Image 1 (cartoon, rainbow, N blue to C red):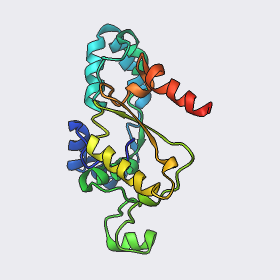
Image 2 (cartoon, helix red, strand yellow; image 1 turned 180 degrees about the vertical axis):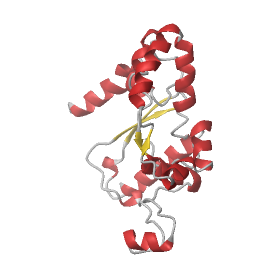
Image 3 (cartoon, one colour; image 1 turned 90 degrees about the horizontal axis):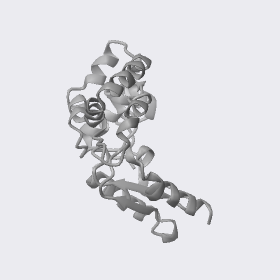
Image 4 (cartoon, rainbow, N blue to C red; image 1 turned 60 degrees about the vertical axis):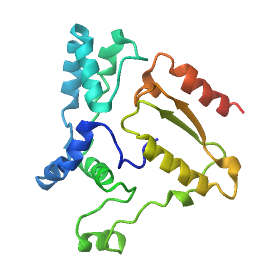
Length: 205
């Protein structure tokens, strides 16, 4: 689970945040991050059919992924959906969290702008220790997930313990797969064993 990102390990993502790339684009009026992603999704599969290792390297740069639990012959299919676009404002918000190590609402950068949106000069922090959890919540954690650093994930789990202090039965179930990366939870060959079957077992209780 990704909430806090201050200890993110993925170099490219961290560098983009440190250099305020998204903020610069927003200042120039750019609203879409990877606006022509359909071009990438057309070109990438063609390249992947020729050189799967190139596409693995590309996924590694973007999301710290490896082929350890993936089907290398399906790499072209993976690249039909990755990377996906989003808004520049969303990337700005994510960059703020990486630089500041907080989980807060969007920072409009000036006291006046924040006051207009939040009635206070700084963006409010999300207090996850006060979150109301459902009867069952599942966390899936990967040891090779460079987007969800263990320090950040453990901080989130600590907050969940605080949130469920009065009803420990609602404490999230935490499933750790040491050799899983960020995308393995959805596209790994054996995800049905470590993710899907566990989800189904909880749904069927």
